[in-house]
Image (cartoon, rainbow, N blue to C red):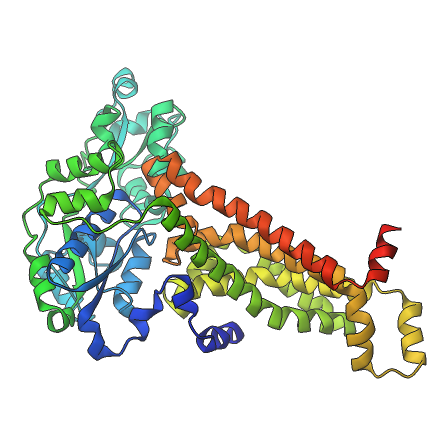
Length: 502
């Protein structure tokens, strides 16, 4: 990993080519006053609150960047601590139970703990978006379920819970202990859970109390009769030094305290999720400011294409610098080569999303961790095909080259690599096509690319947005495959092409 880290750091313009995420990180401290970054989690309410924060910054004349839907709580928290974002919307219950490990702490205690980390928070914005479990009203009424305790009498119920809720200390593990529930839930995306609930595929799911889908689907919110869930008051977290770098923005964020009640937040969520308005427009209307300029679909696709090409091209280029020598080494040193093949094979078995997240502590959020993860996934096809191509050369040809006195380096470059070229290029083509698809996950950590509209489309149940990312990704994969096939024909000696056809 040190290899890819050095190359990423030394390659000019990587972040600029992908999403310009490193601009804020690399900028000198004295220039940060003109540029601020706000992040948001991967659900609609968080994006709306992020757009509100961004709108307030624009009103103060600041150059603001909104890193939208960056994934789960831990990603945003780590980015805030590392200074990669300056602020984001959080909830006091999450802060106390999950992030600071201070169950039951009041806001004064939370502020003190934040200050020790160089962070601060606003007063509550005015609504409490607590967790809850919900069921379809007809199903709950038929079974006589009104409280969480009532679930104990129905072990056959199918629960589908959001993946983050399944893992959080203040989520399913604690709820299971508090209520002694017998169900074994499945994990799924929060937004997909509502569709599963409406179709009857699951019986209950976790809710946010301000979700627009609760009244839309006619859901019954089960009473937390043992008062397990803490208060989840919405606040803005921000870096303490922002008070010196952008004091007017800090004042504006603090001025949001008490301005949004639960009914208002649920209405804003509904405008995005049910009326299909953009978060930026909804936030701007509520603030009474002009919405930021939005580009047309063609312009958005072009931007995402540039970002996606940068992620795939840079990661594949870096991988070739290591994978080709490793493949040659594996072919020349069979015993050690098996270890090389096993190690690269092991890397390929790691879940891709986990690898993306594992890269965040090393490279932060944005393009760089995505490039590092894609680099690892590019190694196996190139290493294995290089090894296979070289070891597949007939023994008599290699012996003939040695018998006429050609030095090993000359044999490699003039005979062995040309003969193995088709196999090597096939491995590179495979790695490139795999990376085109896998790179869509980079959107979860702020790397941009085609995954951005796909994630937004899933969250908003918008097929058009999903296709805006999925179709170009499929087209790019076909183009990449065609380009490598053309390169293969161009580089393969004519005699070998004729022999292959024969």
